[in-house]
Image 1 (cartoon, rainbow, N blue to C red):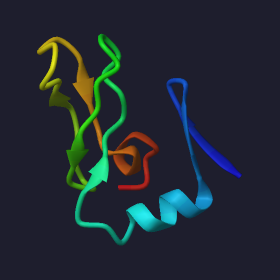
Image 2 (cartoon, helix red, strand yellow; image 1 turned 180 degrees about the vertical axis):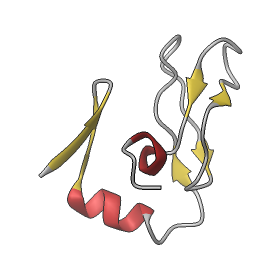
Image 3 (cartoon, rainbow, N blue to C red; image 1 turned 30 degrees about the horizontal axis):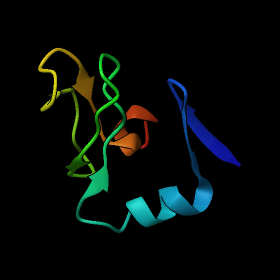
Image 4 (cartoon, helix red, strand yellow; image 1 turned 60 degrees about the vertical axis):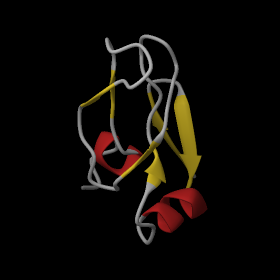
Length: 65
C-alpha cells in the first residue's frame, strides 16, 4: 500500500520507519520542490530554500499525527 500526498508517495515500510525516527525527510515545497530533515511532528514550516512555500512531516501531511 502506498500513502500519497500532493504527488509524493511513501510505502507502508517507510511510514513505519518514520514513526520511530527522530527526524524525517519533509514533504517537498510546493513552490520549488526543496525538502529537508524535520521532526516527525513538523507542520507548516516555511521553505528554507525559496522562503515562499511550506513543508510538513509526511506523518502530519497524511494525518497520522
